[in-house]
Image 1 (cartoon, one colour):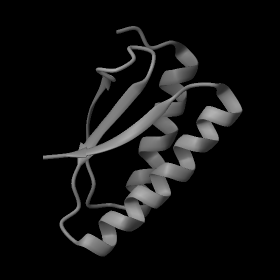
Image 2 (image 1 turned 90 degrees about the horizontal axis):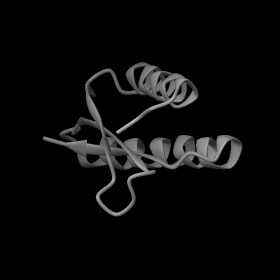
Image 3 (image 1 turned 120 degrees about the vertical axis):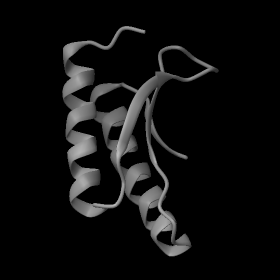
Image 4 (image 1 turned 90 degrees about the vertical axis):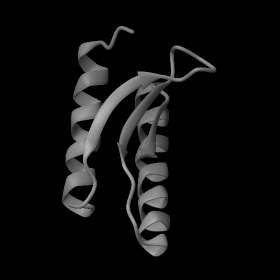
Length: 81
């Protein structure tokens, strides 16, 4: 998997935004999507509360859509563990 400079910059910005809004969430790693190697999955730890999980998915959905529309990179935040 190759991540270019702009992708890394966008990943770093997204992870920082996540840390600010969801301090309990930790970055795990970045992997390729199994369906499309051009899509990136940003793996983070899960939140324990269901309401907080909904907030997280809404927040990440908006950020991911912005990245896709503005830069053409498909990145998804995947809560794991």
